[in-house]
Image (cartoon, rainbow, N blue to C red; front, side, top):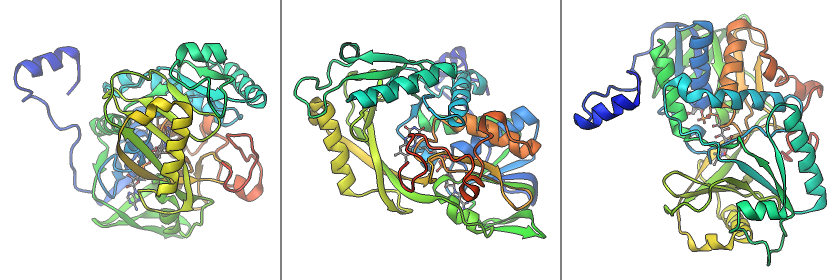
Length: 417
Ligand SMILES: Cc1cc2nc3c(=O)[nH]c(=O)nc-3n(C[C@H](O)[C@H](O)[C@H](O)COP(=O)(O)OP(=O)(O)OC[C@H]3O[C@@H](n4cnc5c(N)ncnc54)[C@H](O)[C@@H]3O)c2cc1C
């Protein structure tokens, strides 16, 4: 079933009776070439690119809940390529290019909207740091424009410029940054993988990993044992628990990150804005809700909801930046489990166990990485070689100290991502 404007029109005129399910609901087979554990954004995109780029289709994605029930459907939907450090910079640049062709590639509307992202700065030092970041982005082939205070005021006149505790000095505009509809991204990749023959198996929790003589042989699940030559662990906040099934202890801590959405409002915010003096970022969804978030709750947890002190902190930051937000009513809040690495950068690597691969450590920024991560992880699983843009995301950097990265330039400091 291909989507097209004509098809939507025809279905609309005939009672929408011709649509078919986006993917099958197969029973698990006894044996696959490859198993992907985790039906989130990264697991589904990996399966899709394994099929599309490498012609491998005897693959199962095993998801313990329903597809898209994890962080892929819980994030604040920001897509950007404004990373500074070598290693991250080229990876996110590659990922953004994949985003830009994604809807045509998947034949699916993921509502990718390049509305522009503005990182505000509030001091001379911050301005210098953002100027440096902007130059790094331009050198990488991406876009960046340094705005002064008047430049920001022209684009975002509703911010508090005059009576604020942290005066706005300017902002770094990333015009190709923006948002996408998070769960549509999961659905689009799921549909694309299914169409190529990948089995997407829901309600199938992996409970054990079978290893013999240092090589993976398959997995134990709530729907029985399944054999496979290669297994990829792609379970985000549950990475530590699933890796433990293979006897591995990962340099990952799971923390809660909360998000919030207000009642639907008329269009008011047409960019993505990130506050520079507190962790606060905001955009407006196509339904009109203001979607915003802040920092982690900063205690290790597997709960999908957070605590009130962080809610207060996020609301305070919003009120400081744009007092008008005080008139909006918050409709919902929720949390997701973040797989935090000590240096804030991800892991896409083989493990010491033959045939067992690891994709995790996306911290609070893995939504934008979904296309790039799936592409690079599929490359690694199919060819046993690292894909160039993701070549520095090695697991052993935490043991050897070589190649540690940090997206905020703070160095490798525990819990200072
Ligand atoms: C509130 C919030 C806001 C965020 N905002 C942004 C943002 O604006 N921009 C951005 O780039 N990123 C953002 N992120 C981060 C981003 O959402 C995550 O980094 C990314 O979604 C993680 O990868 P995933 O999609 O594969 O994870 P998930 O969707 O969590 O997928 C992992 C899957 O594995 C499954 N699983 C776990 N254990 C097992 C098992 N034993 N057997 C089978 N299946 C299992 C889970 O059920 C889950 O579906 C945000 C996250 C949150 C929570």
